[in-house]
Every structure is written in structure tokens, then in C-alpha cells.
Image (cartoon, rainbow, N blue to C red; front, side):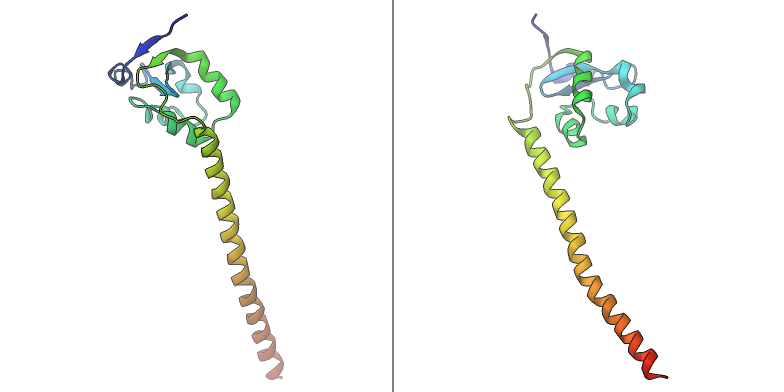
Amino acid sequence: MSLKVYSLSDVKAHTSDKSCWLVVHGKVYDVTEFLEEHPGGFDIILSSTGKDATQDFEEIGHSNSAKKLLEKYLIGEFEGGDSAPAGAQEQQQSRNAQKQLKQKDSATRAFHVILPLLILVAALALNFYFSSR
């Protein structure tokens, strides 16, 4: 079965809560029925309509079950194809992992600065307490 091919102008004609189409990985989905069920709220989906929403979809980090659910709403292919290069999902996961490592590194650095300062303050407080007796 060959899927119908939709243009960007076709997709732009469906950007409301009455008719909402998304383009993700070169495929067009009519997600109108899903708007009220979306855990992140319908406005998140509406903000990604009328364009290729692949990057928006992948940045959120949808689960495999969410990706499988999307297939239920497939209506055709996008004439622009898949905007995400091969391996883009793995690259996004790698970037997310690097972000987490940077956050851990900055927390560790802060700890390495704050701990000696706390020890110094405690030592000065004890020195002041015992010298004033």
C-alpha cells in the first residue's frame, strides 16, 4: 500500500485543534483525536504543527510506546522526507547524556569549593569561640 504524499502547504492547512497534523521523520500524522489525551497538553502539539516537528518530537525524549502510538495516526508521507539524518536519535541521546555529565561535573566543582569554605568558617568560629573564653 502506497501512502499519500503531502506537501508543506498541505500540512500548514491543519494547525488547529479541529484538524491537527504533525510531520515527524518524514511521515504525516493526523493527531487531532489525540490532542486531549497528550500528557504534555494539547498546546505543546499545536506549537509544532505547520512544520517538520521531528526535532521537537525527539528533543522531548518520547518513550518507545509513545513512538508506537504515533503510528496509529499515520496518514501519509511528507514530500520533504525525513529531516533527521541517520543516527539523529542516537546523537540526541548522546547529547542528553553529555548534558547530564556536565551538570554532575558542575555540582562536583561547587562541592569542592563550598566544602573547604565551610571547614574554614567552622575553624574560624571555633577559634573565635575558644580564644574569647
